[in-house]
Image (tube, rainbow over all chains, first blue to last red; front, side):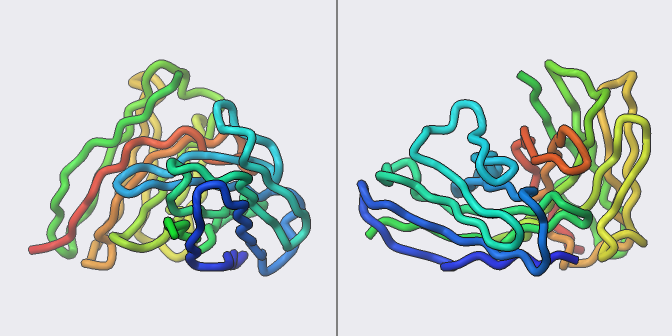
Length: 107
Length: 118
């Protein structure tokens, strides 16, 4: 199985901050890396697919980059509605696997 | 806009079989991969497997011996069966669409909590 490791596991930030979350795969996965946002009691929501493509309806302050084994999700100018848990996921091969999640909390 | 809705018992006894159905509405079940993903309370996400609209399946090896997935294109739904459940199978179960076998997961059903307890 491909292991996905996110860092940090949690972070505290203020509205307006720029936030960066990293995701590392245990082997090369090309650009088959997706990002999801999950709020308490809700299903995850797709934010970014194949590393850097923004899902329709997702604000442009979200962006993704990377390739191979190292990937980044960036949130520019954090908004109150962005406080949530973020997961990366590889779709390079089955079993598809997720990172452990990064919880973004209000400072 | 396609919508997915899980249904099934919220409580299953240990050693019994968990059975869930996902109904696909406002969209075709053809040409997509239909996945089940679960999330134990307070924990992360685990991919269980998928069933292609043709009936082909791929399961997580960690659960493969206990999982069966099927699809009924005429009724617009797909199903999950997980046998010999234990408390470790207590989780929110999501049904999710993927565009391809290397695709992303979207959309997701709202999820259904299944508790394994006597």
